[in-house]
Image (cartoon, rainbow, N blue to C red; front, side, top):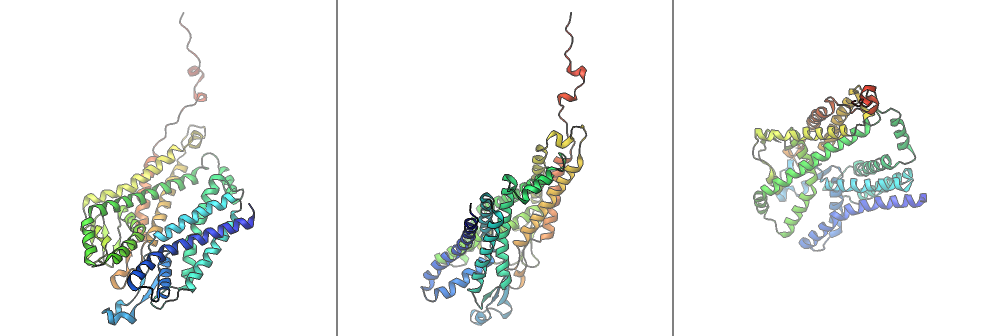
Amino acid sequence: MQRVLVAVLAAVDALVAAAVGLVAVLAPFTIVWIAVFGDAGAWAALWPATARVWQLGHLVPVHIDASEFAAPLGIPDAGAVFWVSVAPLLFAAFTLFFAARSGRRAVQSGAPLIALPAGVVVFVLAAAGVQLTSGNDVAETTTWQAIVLPSAVYAVGAIAGAVRAAWRDGDGGAIDRIQDLVDGWGPVWRDVLPLIVRGTAVVIVGLVCASATILAALVALNGGEIVALFERTHADVVGATTLTLVQLAYVPTMIGWGISWIAGPGFALGSDTAVSPSGTSLGVVPGVPIFGVLPEGGSGWLLLVALVPVALGALAGWIARRAYADDWAHEGTGDEHYGPRVVIAVGIAVGSGAVAALIAAVSGGSMGPGRLADIGADAGPAALAVGLEALLGAAIMLLTPMRRQLAWSDLSDDETSPAPADT
């Protein structure tokens, strides 16, 4: 494929990724605005609001200064100026997915070193355009963050998709050279890195699925409380619909909190609060309907959920164990090689803990003034808990003694020769 065409297609992919995210915010905002206010001053208000939501969804902190409206609304001066940095991660997740798809296409085109930079540059320009055309005195963002952070989300997704595709199918370049280098490590070590990556993916995907399942179950079991909180807002149809859409955008964020809850450390919904399997201490929380799923207390039985990361670590270890070839494990000598298996177990633990820390970091932050400045999970405890629990499970499956399967060459002449016939 011609290089110019490859660059153009990658640029279009990046532009579509940015545009779809913006339209996903602008369309419902437009409907709500017209339903409530008509078309008076629509664009002057809608575009800055759309830009801020899109930027917040890509990890950009937003500074709110409502001091001009504080007195008429009865808001204390201390509560009129604050930061909002808890991201609705649905937008970042979409961008990551779309960018990974674009990265895979870049490898398939045969010119990834042209396609990837072209896509990232176009997304940088799109983020810069959004920032420079959406000035607003009430909700402001730092310019460099508004450009760099959304672009970093896209770049990470594109690179991850490209590396995965190149590792699987080859790229005739850097990834192939890395694979050749790894293959040169010999049968004992050459599969260590791929098995660490595969095991880490098993643990993280399993935790995400477990957290999503628990969240869905809590919504089903606490539907009455959620409906009651909706009714207390006294919102009309438009308001209730808007509130529902906002909560849906925060579902991936709450799944991130759930991962820390499953691991044990839990998360906070304000300063001096804690939600964990061992207990819940909340006090007064915002009357957001989805918070109706929060447990009122803890139980010793809930601590058993910490076995989920252990089980996922064991599953990752079992998958790695199944991937062993006989010459990988014993190299034809009959002696077991514990070194590679120790490295795989530790690698799965470190990788799982690092990803858990990243999820905790991007799903936490501030949601308002005062106590609401501390929301989400603490990255350090979440990483330590997930890493240790995954290590325990992986070590159980990887470090138990292996029974070697005998080959014909291992049998003695007496064992291989047929028994003499009776006369």
